[in-house]
Amino acid sequence: MSPLDLHVNDGYLPMVDGTLVYHRGYGDRPTAVKDPKPSLFVSPRVFRRNGSVVASRTYPLSAAVPPKGRPAPAAKDPANPGQFLVHRARWASFFPDRTLIAETGSTISIRVTNHLAQDHALQFLHAGAANVHVGTGAIKPGQTKTLTFKAPAEGTYLYCDPGADPADPTADPVQRTLGLFGALLVVNPDSSPATLPLNGRSGSSPWQFPRMRRSTGRGGGHADVRLSPGGRCPQFQPECGSRNGPHRPVHAIHRRRRGPPPAPFPR
Image 1 (spheres, rainbow, N blue to C red):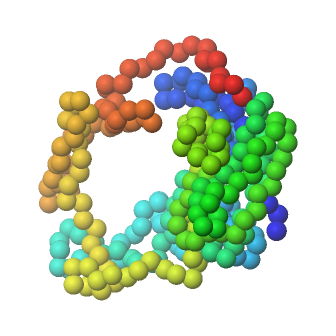
Image 2: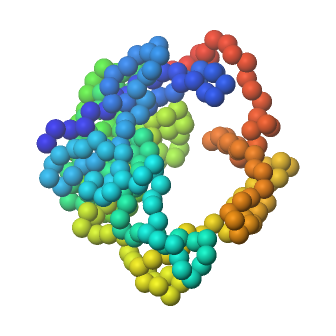
Image 3: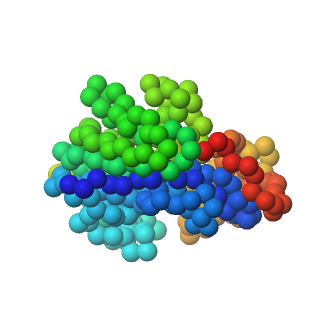
């Protein structure tokens, strides 16, 4: 079994207004800070029981991929006009970048190379025996370490650079804020989603969208809006948010002027 290679890189990413913002991340190839397309995250990988590592945006690997990313309904719901019955345990799920997927019983092996000027690390929180953290420990600049451990129990686990205190990664969140983070999803390939009786019909449930959320434009508040029987709704304003504040209407966000990138954090 060959380990998955990750690289601790840094670089600048353009925001929606063209501003370049300094980031760090676990990339899939080495890149320099001035690279116009730095590798700052890894696309989804699946650690399988047979020891292979598969690149795949979807899981289960054998499940059908939803057309255009949206699961197709099984049929119209005869008891509820305008609603549709869904296929259960049929479609594969899509996963975002920075996601690692491990099957129960698999071995996770990751080789990490630090390309920055300070020590960095990779640590999976609560993924070891008795919920202890498992990680590489400090990796010196230019050095490589390999982390190998058995997939933990089914569930979702955070991986990150724990910062100054590996025993308490919450004490120094700077590295996570800059982009050195991701998620590990551990799944049992032998199980399938539970089939629960809904609306009196076992094995199916209707798609229902009875209400949506709309920004009131006043202090970031929201109001519930009910959809009409035809599925139409009042006009909505797109929203966006940040790690440092609540979601706000786009028109309320101040656009920064273009300029030279700011000085980076110590690498």
